[in-house]
Image 1: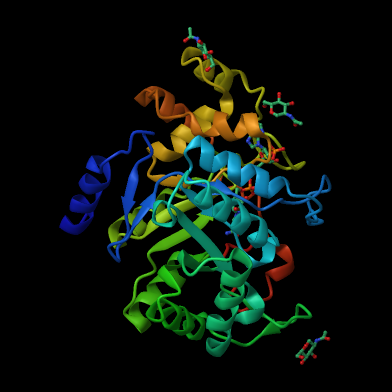
Image 2: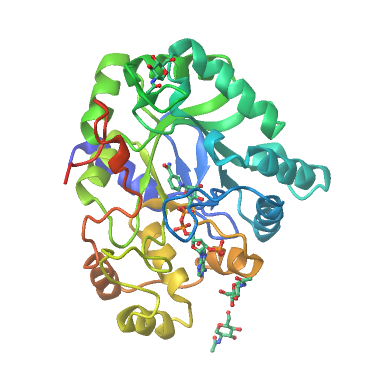
Length: 332
Ligand SMILES: NC(=O)c1ccc[n+]([C@@H]2O[C@H](COP(=O)([O-])OP(=O)(O)OC[C@H]3O[C@@H](n4cnc5c(N)ncnc54)[C@H](OP(=O)(O)O)[C@@H]3O)[C@@H](O)[C@H]2O)c1
Ligand SMILES: *[C@@H]1O[C@H](CO)[C@@H](O)[C@H](O)[C@H]1NC(C)=O
Ligand SMILES: *[C@@H]1O[C@H](CO)[C@@H](O)[C@H](O)[C@H]1NC(C)=O
Ligand SMILES: *[C@@H]1O[C@H](CO)[C@@H](O)[C@H](O)[C@H]1NC(C)=O
């Protein structure tokens, strides 16, 4: 551990908590991010391959419920097709006086077909127009690989894309910039070649995929980790998903001991390992359930048991992209 990472760790531990109990994460560019957020991707259909299509306003309703509940960090992306609903929810809650714009932390993401440097700012302007916002708090490169609209790989280095992200930040369209689904070597290359550290790395993080080495690297570099698909295979699983499921006796006994649900135990554990989880639900009672995790504490031995479920298993794997020169994951 370097002195910098020790200072950073202590800083993270001591950071001010708001009344909701949500920790505040200080980013390496000086901005602040609520350490718990709300996901707005509708995900796959039951076959776990075909994308859900957006048919109604359930995402807007869910984001409104989330803001009423106390969530202040909302995650969306151009590809989710939910930016318009997220924007309506936010603007409704601002006009109702529930929150001010500066109380919220809004993230959106650049899709793979806008990786040319000159395409980044226009893509963000289009997202801002759908969101009906003047700026966002965090813009992420969604994936390291570039594609044409027809899906073929395009030969654009993500270092070029990163220059476009810096342009977007310089124009004030986003407060912070970061990346998603990048590996350590890719982060090192960005930092070395551009001299600008991503503020955030958003990666899949759940009981089956904990990645302690990547987390340690990010901690040393003061790159905050936002964890997507926090429930992994707990509620939905694939044939090869390792345990646990929601009916796992070990998870249930930990949950019962604290009078909490399995979902709450999982989310609290992720916060405890320094991650900002962004659970998604369109069910109002789960919006509240998932947020209500700051009034109990897991013991060290419970956390050790939960660490034991780490199996380096990806719920969101991307075999169809494995031939891209910028494929970020280990090849099976
Ligand atoms: N950067 C990336 O590449 C990337 C990739 C994937 C996801 N993400 C982001 O991360 C967010 C979260 O990931 P995710 O949506 O893949 O998965 P998730 O949040 O781990 O799980 C969502 C699923 O869990 C269910 N659920 C939520 N809370 C529950 C509870 N308390 N009890 C039982 N079931 C519950 C939801 O169903 P209901 O809605 O019916 O409750 C939904 O089926 C996304 O929405 C998106 O914003 C980013
Ligand atoms: C996809 O589009 C690109 C750029 O227009 C083109 O060069 C390529 O041949 C197309 N690929 C397929 C499979 O159609
Ligand atoms: C257990 O949690 C439920 C739901 O939050 C609550 O209504 C109940 O009062 C709690 N019971 C105890 C014994 O704390
Ligand atoms: C909403 O969530 C609650 C708590 O998990 C569950 O009992 C209920 O069935 C869910 N409703 C729908 C429509 O999925």
